[in-house]
Image (cartoon, rainbow, N blue to C red; front, side):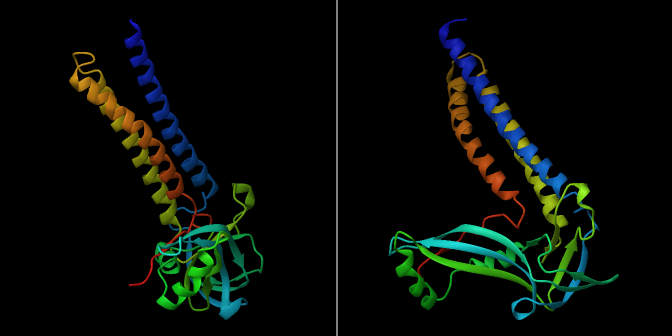
Amino acid sequence: MDFTSFMAAFALAAFWLNTLLIAGAGWSECAALRRRYGFLSAGTGARGVVRSGVGPEGAIAAWRVVQVGRSNGRGPILLHDRSRASVVFGGVVELATGEVEIAAGAPAEVWCGAETRARASARPDAHSFAAALPAASRASGWERTLELPLRVGDAIWLAGHGVPEAQGHAAFVLADFDPWRWRARILWLTVGLVICLLAVAGACTAACLWPPVFGTVGKLGAFAALVAFNLFQLLGKLHHDAIQPPAVASLGGSWRPPR
């Protein structure tokens, strides 16, 4: 084996090592989350209605996000999360099996669905944008505290309440959507990631080894492997962000100037 062949084999081995590490990390993170939220199996979440809440405007709980917005003074205000927290004010949830009292400060996670999060990060009216822009143009940025509450009359899901902590979790879930969907979704996202990585890596490898060695097809395969090597890092990061529990997932957002 000459030096060129050795370096080609080394590069291909590094490409596969990178692929397997990203696929393995994604699978391991998904498995850990599914174990942590093992109580979110199909049919275990009880749907109910908030009957009372001691928080503001009858809220039983809320997801609180502190965001900082920054702008160059002309373009959009880009928002990033400084902190995220689940706040339980306390109250009563009526289920089909009876009423359940939620104590203030209970170790619960508040989950808000995609529609609720989208409304919270949507572009504001012209007046609100104009009021925020001067502060957002400063180095310190513009700060806002956003609360997404679960109020009296809201239909919610209660999952894991009363399950012993020995089962591997320290909190139950209050959600405005069926939380089992999240647990199923992260599995399929992870399966899709692993299949995509292995399929692309296999196709690139087949092209690299296409006879004659170092021919046109092989060179194209090597270029494709180089591009895939860098894109896999991005896919791994996107997968990590996509499977985070709603209580800790980033809200973000971008406020564009109104027309």
